[in-house]
Length: 447
Figure 1 (cartoon, rainbow, N blue to C red):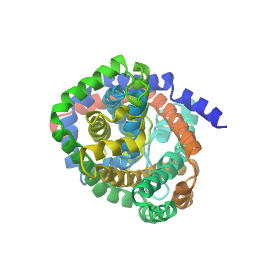
Figure 2: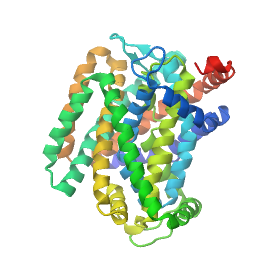
Figure 3: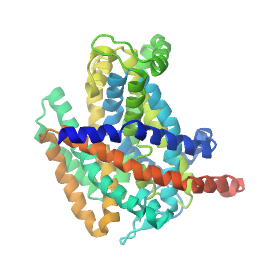
């Protein structure tokens, strides 16, 4: 069974999937005339103005971004980047940057479609995301893709964003502080349950204050390491760019990596971290209090910018600057080693960061899974889903999760396929909505 799923996973995240992800992002970037890169200052201004929001919706535009970031800024930023560098060499970080630059257009298009085609459920709450823009934006013959996305999304969350996260936290706390795994699971269950059972407004409220604090703190620690080793930064950047196009020679415990390995692991881990193309983030943005899809799209694209070009870059640069990547160590342990070598007690910063990042991932993804379940079964499934989500958390701390991780990773890829097909088909509509918005008088488009 493991061999079969490994084979499917290798195909699901193989060359065709990476080409589809990068190709869709490039197609949308070209169609938008690279607006997503040119309008970053405008997006930042909209974000600062979006504390309350105007129009229909359940949460502010700012809270929608923080909710999506609560799910994306997770173990991928600490363990995922380290795994990419450990397996693909420093060049993997370069390809993560490229993935993010074109992924901003993908994330923008997702949010535009999510707000444009969202619905109200029976309880009056807004629901949106790929399943809704497939159903409401595409021809009837494509509707089965919406059901497929919702099915894969509701199941994938229990792996990647629930049991795997609680397992990661329990392992690092047991290693660093000898905390029993079950104790970690019970505490996490209570904490996550207190947030999740309150629905999107409570999730958004917690995310709006916790995500900025944890992200800024982690970035500041990374900047401290960079400043302390400023003379090594130019060399690290040269190493990253050079390895992206020439591969990495074997050194220490590092077995060497080809250009293909750097590309494959850089793109796969980049997408795993920022989720551009997976279709998860637009579920949060669909709940934003706005009547302007383009404005929410610009706020949404900042999620990829912040997650990969800022937070992941900090992790990657610290690993390359401290020169621990050839050690043969991988995952969160490699990041821990890098920070610990640079700053006394730095490994504890990584441990605390991993715990916070995993916690926010669990609360953010609970909303994604819930909206997928609502699409499939209606609002009557909300409470059973929330209870199941909370109860699964301690289970994750007690079981071997290699198989669950593999299945969830494969389901993640299967989520992306319906979403990317929808974005390609809805691309011309996104381009038209964007042109119409920016062709309005300045006062009207900024209101």
